[in-house]
Amino acid sequence: MADQMKDTVKQKYAEAALKVMGGERGSCGPSGACGCDPVTANLYDVAETVGLPESAVLASLGCGNPTALADLHAGDTVLDLGSGGGIDVLLSAKRVGPTGKAYGLDMTDEMLALARANQAKTGAENVEFLKGEIENIPLPSEAVDVIISNCVINLSADKDKVLKEAFRVLKPGGRFAVSDVVCRGEIPEAVRRNMELWVGCIAGALEENEYRRLLANAGFVDINVEPTRVYEFSAAGIDDVVAREISGRVMGAFIRARKPA
Image (cartoon, rainbow, N blue to C red; front, side, top):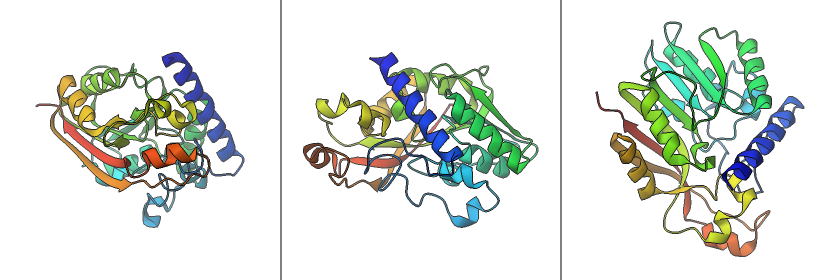
Protein backbone atom coordinates (compact mmCIF):
# COMPACT_ATOMS: atom_id res chain seq x y z
CA MET A 1 0.00 0.00 0.00
CA ALA A 2 2.81 2.43 0.92
CA ASP A 3 4.61 1.81 -2.37
CA GLN A 4 1.36 2.27 -4.29
CA MET A 5 0.78 5.61 -2.51
CA LYS A 6 4.31 6.77 -3.29
CA ASP A 7 4.04 5.80 -6.96
CA THR A 8 0.65 7.53 -7.28
CA VAL A 9 1.91 10.70 -5.61
CA LYS A 10 4.99 10.74 -7.85
CA GLN A 11 2.86 10.26 -10.98
CA LYS A 12 0.36 12.99 -10.06
CA TYR A 13 3.03 15.55 -9.18
CA ALA A 14 4.97 14.72 -12.35
CA GLU A 15 1.77 15.45 -14.29
CA ALA A 16 1.36 18.73 -12.36
CA ALA A 17 4.94 19.77 -13.24
CA LEU A 18 4.39 19.00 -16.93
CA LYS A 19 1.18 21.07 -16.90
CA VAL A 20 3.10 24.03 -15.50
CA MET A 21 5.84 23.62 -18.11
CA GLY A 22 3.02 23.88 -20.65
CA GLY A 23 1.85 27.17 -19.12
CA GLU A 24 -1.09 25.84 -17.06
CA ARG A 25 -1.58 25.90 -13.29
CA GLY A 26 -0.64 22.61 -11.69
CA SER A 27 -3.14 20.60 -9.68
CA CYS A 28 -2.84 17.41 -7.69
CA GLY A 29 -6.33 16.31 -6.79
CA PRO A 30 -10.04 16.53 -7.45
CA SER A 31 -11.96 19.78 -7.52
CA GLY A 32 -12.31 21.03 -3.97
CA ALA A 33 -9.07 19.33 -2.92
CA CYS A 34 -5.42 20.26 -3.25
CA GLY A 35 -4.73 22.22 -6.43
CA CYS A 36 -7.79 24.47 -6.38
CA ASP A 37 -10.12 26.15 -3.91
CA PRO A 38 -10.28 25.90 -1.02
CA VAL A 39 -6.80 24.56 -0.19
CA THR A 40 -4.34 26.39 -2.43
CA ALA A 41 -5.98 29.72 -3.21
CA ASN A 42 -4.51 33.10 -2.21
CA LEU A 43 -1.57 31.85 -0.14
CA TYR A 44 1.06 34.35 -1.28
CA ASP A 45 1.09 38.11 -1.17
CA VAL A 46 1.65 39.68 -4.58
CA ALA A 47 4.58 41.61 -3.13
CA GLU A 48 6.25 38.30 -2.18
CA THR A 49 6.04 36.79 -5.64
CA VAL A 50 7.34 39.82 -7.54
CA GLY A 51 10.50 38.72 -9.31
CA LEU A 52 9.66 35.02 -9.17
CA PRO A 53 9.14 33.11 -12.42
CA GLU A 54 5.48 32.59 -13.27
CA SER A 55 6.15 28.85 -13.42
CA ALA A 56 7.19 28.85 -9.75
CA VAL A 57 3.88 30.46 -8.79
CA LEU A 58 1.80 28.21 -11.08
CA ALA A 59 3.45 25.14 -9.54
CA SER A 60 2.53 26.09 -5.98
CA LEU A 61 0.37 23.24 -4.65
CA GLY A 62 0.64 24.09 -0.98
CA CYS A 63 -1.87 24.79 1.77
CA GLY A 64 -0.05 27.68 3.44
CA ASN A 65 2.92 30.01 3.26
CA PRO A 66 5.57 28.64 5.64
CA THR A 67 8.17 31.17 4.53
CA ALA A 68 6.02 34.03 5.82
CA LEU A 69 5.54 32.36 9.20
CA ALA A 70 8.91 30.68 9.74
CA ASP A 71 11.42 32.70 11.74
CA LEU A 72 14.14 32.96 9.08
CA HIS A 73 17.33 34.95 9.64
CA ALA A 74 20.24 36.02 7.46
CA GLY A 75 22.77 33.20 7.37
CA ASP A 76 20.29 30.40 8.17
CA THR A 77 20.34 27.09 6.34
CA VAL A 78 16.80 26.08 5.37
CA LEU A 79 15.44 22.78 4.05
CA ASP A 80 12.07 22.51 2.26
CA LEU A 81 10.64 18.98 2.40
CA GLY A 82 8.84 18.27 -0.89
CA SER A 83 9.92 21.46 -2.63
CA GLY A 84 7.95 21.00 -5.88
CA GLY A 85 8.46 23.88 -8.32
CA GLY A 86 10.63 25.68 -5.78
CA ILE A 87 8.55 28.70 -4.73
CA ASP A 88 9.21 28.31 -0.98
CA VAL A 89 12.91 27.58 -1.53
CA LEU A 90 13.33 30.71 -3.65
CA LEU A 91 11.42 32.84 -1.13
CA SER A 92 13.55 31.38 1.70
CA ALA A 93 16.75 32.06 -0.22
CA LYS A 94 15.82 35.76 -0.35
CA ARG A 95 15.18 35.78 3.40
CA VAL A 96 18.43 34.06 4.45
CA GLY A 97 20.56 36.09 2.05
CA PRO A 98 23.91 35.27 0.43
CA THR A 99 25.41 34.02 3.70
CA GLY A 100 22.56 31.49 4.07
CA LYS A 101 21.50 28.44 2.08
CA ALA A 102 18.15 27.06 0.96
CA TYR A 103 17.81 23.37 0.07
CA GLY A 104 14.81 21.86 -1.67
CA LEU A 105 14.16 18.11 -1.50
CA ASP A 106 11.84 16.34 -3.93
CA MET A 107 11.48 12.80 -5.28
CA THR A 108 9.92 13.71 -8.63
CA ASP A 109 12.28 14.29 -11.56
CA GLU A 110 9.83 16.57 -13.38
CA MET A 111 9.39 18.82 -10.34
CA LEU A 112 13.16 18.98 -9.81
CA ALA A 113 13.66 19.97 -13.45
CA LEU A 114 11.02 22.69 -13.08
CA ALA A 115 12.53 23.94 -9.80
CA ARG A 116 16.05 24.09 -11.25
CA ALA A 117 14.74 25.98 -14.28
CA ASN A 118 13.05 28.45 -11.92
CA GLN A 119 16.26 28.81 -9.94
CA ALA A 120 18.18 29.56 -13.16
CA LYS A 121 15.62 32.25 -14.10
CA THR A 122 16.12 34.02 -10.75
CA GLY A 123 19.89 33.61 -10.68
CA ALA A 124 19.74 32.44 -7.04
CA GLU A 125 23.15 31.07 -6.07
CA ASN A 126 22.37 30.10 -2.48
CA VAL A 127 19.89 27.39 -3.57
CA GLU A 128 20.35 23.65 -4.11
CA PHE A 129 17.70 21.13 -5.12
CA LEU A 130 18.25 17.54 -3.99
CA LYS A 131 16.60 14.37 -5.24
CA GLY A 132 15.34 12.11 -2.48
CA GLU A 133 12.47 11.12 -0.22
CA ILE A 134 11.41 12.99 2.89
CA GLU A 135 11.55 9.70 4.82
CA ASN A 136 15.29 9.48 4.03
CA ILE A 137 16.73 12.99 3.85
CA PRO A 138 20.07 13.00 1.94
CA LEU A 139 21.80 15.40 4.34
CA PRO A 140 24.03 14.76 7.35
CA SER A 141 22.77 15.10 10.92
CA GLU A 142 22.57 18.61 12.38
CA ALA A 143 22.91 20.24 8.95
CA VAL A 144 20.07 22.80 8.89
CA ASP A 145 18.66 25.56 11.09
CA VAL A 146 15.06 25.49 9.83
CA ILE A 147 12.83 22.90 8.18
CA ILE A 148 9.84 24.10 6.20
CA SER A 149 7.31 22.15 4.15
CA ASN A 150 4.10 23.04 2.38
CA CYS A 151 1.30 20.47 2.28
CA VAL A 152 3.65 17.52 1.73
CA ILE A 153 4.07 15.59 4.99
CA ASN A 154 0.42 14.49 4.76
CA LEU A 155 1.33 12.67 1.52
CA SER A 156 3.80 10.34 3.25
CA ALA A 157 2.74 6.85 4.30
CA ASP A 158 5.36 6.93 7.12
CA LYS A 159 4.99 10.28 8.87
CA ASP A 160 6.73 9.00 12.00
CA LYS A 161 9.90 8.45 9.97
CA VAL A 162 9.58 11.85 8.27
CA LEU A 163 9.46 13.66 11.60
CA LYS A 164 12.35 11.63 13.05
CA GLU A 165 14.42 12.47 9.95
CA ALA A 166 13.50 16.13 10.31
CA PHE A 167 14.69 16.01 13.93
CA ARG A 168 17.96 14.31 12.88
CA VAL A 169 18.99 16.89 10.29
CA LEU A 170 18.12 19.92 12.44
CA LYS A 171 20.87 21.54 14.46
CA PRO A 172 20.32 21.74 18.23
CA GLY A 173 17.87 24.59 18.75
CA GLY A 174 16.70 24.23 15.13
CA ARG A 175 13.12 25.08 14.16
CA PHE A 176 10.42 23.03 12.44
CA ALA A 177 7.87 25.31 10.75
CA VAL A 178 5.56 23.65 8.23
CA SER A 179 2.18 24.20 6.63
CA ASP A 180 0.18 21.00 6.40
CA VAL A 181 -3.34 19.64 6.31
CA VAL A 182 -4.70 18.24 9.59
CA CYS A 183 -8.09 16.94 10.66
CA ARG A 184 -10.26 17.06 13.77
CA GLY A 185 -11.84 13.80 14.77
CA GLU A 186 -11.90 10.58 12.80
CA ILE A 187 -11.81 10.57 9.00
CA PRO A 188 -13.90 7.69 7.56
CA GLU A 189 -11.91 4.66 6.40
CA ALA A 190 -13.38 4.99 2.90
CA VAL A 191 -11.74 8.40 2.65
CA ARG A 192 -8.43 7.09 4.00
CA ARG A 193 -8.38 4.41 1.29
CA ASN A 194 -9.26 6.82 -1.52
CA MET A 195 -6.02 7.27 -3.50
CA GLU A 196 -7.24 10.39 -5.31
CA LEU A 197 -8.07 12.06 -2.00
CA TRP A 198 -4.67 10.96 -0.63
CA VAL A 199 -2.88 12.64 -3.52
CA GLY A 200 -5.25 15.58 -3.05
CA CYS A 201 -3.85 16.17 0.47
CA ILE A 202 -7.00 15.03 2.30
CA ALA A 203 -6.92 11.31 3.04
CA GLY A 204 -3.42 11.30 4.54
CA ALA A 205 -3.98 14.23 6.90
CA LEU A 206 -3.03 13.52 10.51
CA GLU A 207 -5.45 14.19 13.34
CA GLU A 208 -4.05 17.30 15.03
CA ASN A 209 -3.34 15.62 18.39
CA GLU A 210 -1.66 12.72 16.61
CA TYR A 211 0.60 15.25 14.87
CA ARG A 212 1.58 16.62 18.27
CA ARG A 213 2.21 13.11 19.59
CA LEU A 214 4.46 12.12 16.68
CA LEU A 215 6.47 15.34 16.98
CA ALA A 216 6.98 14.73 20.70
CA ASN A 217 7.98 11.11 20.02
CA ALA A 218 10.61 12.35 17.58
CA GLY A 219 12.07 14.56 20.34
CA PHE A 220 10.59 17.96 19.51
CA VAL A 221 9.52 20.49 22.15
CA ASP A 222 7.48 23.72 22.07
CA ILE A 223 4.96 22.06 19.75
CA ASN A 224 2.11 24.17 18.41
CA VAL A 225 -0.57 23.30 15.84
CA GLU A 226 -2.38 26.44 14.70
CA PRO A 227 -5.29 26.02 12.24
CA THR A 228 -5.19 28.66 9.51
CA ARG A 229 -8.10 27.64 7.24
CA VAL A 230 -11.03 25.30 7.77
CA TYR A 231 -12.06 23.77 4.45
CA GLU A 232 -15.61 23.46 3.20
CA PHE A 233 -15.88 21.00 0.32
CA SER A 234 -18.50 20.98 -2.38
CA ALA A 235 -19.42 17.70 -4.02
CA ALA A 236 -17.73 18.84 -7.24
CA GLY A 237 -15.14 16.18 -8.01
CA ILE A 238 -15.78 14.41 -4.70
CA ASP A 239 -18.52 11.97 -3.80
CA ASP A 240 -21.24 14.03 -2.07
CA VAL A 241 -21.29 11.71 0.98
CA VAL A 242 -17.51 12.07 1.33
CA ALA A 243 -17.77 15.85 0.90
CA ARG A 244 -20.26 16.01 3.79
CA GLU A 245 -18.08 13.74 5.95
CA ILE A 246 -14.93 15.84 5.62
CA SER A 247 -16.29 19.36 5.21
CA GLY A 248 -15.36 21.50 8.19
CA ARG A 249 -13.20 18.74 9.71
CA VAL A 250 -10.16 19.16 7.48
CA MET A 251 -8.03 22.28 7.82
CA GLY A 252 -4.80 23.89 6.82
CA ALA A 253 -2.53 24.46 9.80
CA PHE A 254 0.82 25.94 10.65
CA ILE A 255 2.83 23.49 12.76
CA ARG A 256 5.77 24.72 14.80
CA ALA A 257 8.22 22.82 16.97
CA ARG A 258 11.83 23.06 18.10
CA LYS A 259 14.75 20.68 18.58
CA PRO A 260 16.11 21.19 22.10
CA ALA A 261 19.37 23.15 22.20
